[in-house]
Amino acid sequence: MNKPQTAKRITATIFILLMVCLSSIPVFATTPTVLQCDLNGDKIINTSDLIDISNHMGATGTPGWIKEDVDKNGIIQVADLMFVANHYGESLSTSGGTTSGGTTNGVGRIQKLSVSYSDAMADTTNQKFIASHFDMVDCPSTDTTEAANVKALNSNIKILGYFDSIMASKTFSDWSTVNGHEDWFAHSLSGGRIERVVYPGEYLVNPNSGWSNYFAQRCKTFLTTYPQFDGVFLDDAATDLVGFDYTFKVSYSQFATGVVSNWESWMISYMSNIKSTVGSDIVMANCYTGTVLAEKTKCMLWENFMHGRSSSYSSNGYSISDGLQAINSLHDQATKGNIIATNSGCSGGTTAQKQTWAKFCYACLAFAVVDVSKAYFSWEFFNTDTNHGYTSEMDMNLGQPVGDYYKVSGTTQVYARQFANYYVAANLNVLGTGTVTFTLNGASYTLSPRTAVFIPK
Image (cartoon, rainbow, N blue to C red; front, top):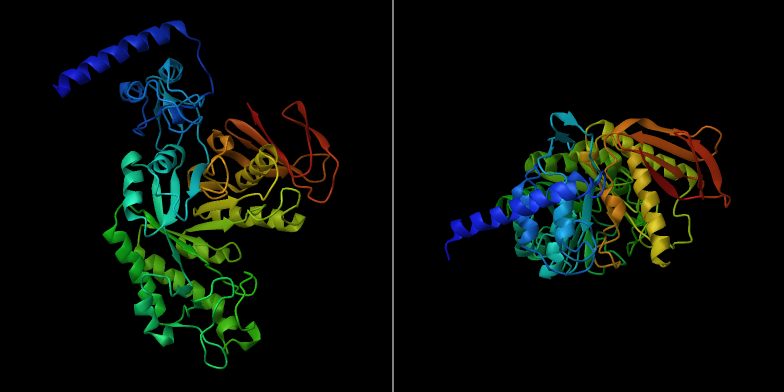
């Protein structure tokens, strides 16, 4: 088959369809967004995007299973082509906004993170879903082939390889090396290694030992060897061992002298060493109780932000002060230009109840954002809910924030923030049971505790 001639025929067909679409359909103002119509990620809506849809014409699956299902109805059809045609010629600026005819529309959204552990990445269907729905994925560092497949499907996606930053396990591939360095382990007063209760055979390491240089170089070698990865995700990056709720087979009072008291300073130096060694690649630390580490790695994840995966849908998930503290802590890191990311979830409940929590957690992250291109929202883990960690709120093009969040006048715990394209409001009253009615941008709204609303301009 003559491929150049075939390409010309396809382009001609698409051009004809484009002309028909543009002359016969109304303009869809906000659905889908320009970002969703940029199927190949080249920051311009053109014939290539239309060809992309035509190559999938007639395919079916779950709603939104691939990016070509623009209207998310589960069928690739002319309607998807029409949506993209309405944005033909528009382009995305490097700041995340869109331009059309030289004007800025202010379109931008918080980035989407997928936490895909276990064998979530093994299935090719899952790889396609991740590539078409997310901007970043955190997956096992052993998923090298799977990561390469996802990167081939979406060259713009950022892929992070998982590592535990302070634990060494008999199940890890480098155990034989680590096991030979007794001085790398943290010890009890009796001189024994400190073993975890939840994960038997997993031992606490000493970040102030030779482990620091070893682990930093291991991350560097990993990223050099596997360029499909854009960085590393460092789990258990705690500055406070006690506050992080770890359980070990010996009490903290039996830890060797200095381990608990010096842990924070050790971790700060340790994370600085890792970031310095890795360089420009991403180092995302799971460090909600120690945001100071984000100042060293320039990137952090707040796990169980506002509502954790193991928290029941009927539980508050946090106290009033903790909720505001979490928002402010993230905002503080964002003002420093660092990347902020969150992972939230819900245990039990109906789909609607879980979505209510997802929307609320998303709104709270929105309050903390400084630059939407440096903020990542993740919901659940890939295989722990029916939507594989994707929610429709993730594709809201809020635009960049306009000012900080503020308490709505006349309310106790309702906060709001203005973005270029939306107003966001959330009721942070976790202890009350009544609803609150308030006025925002000239209209009246009612919110129950722990709920949020997104109001398009």
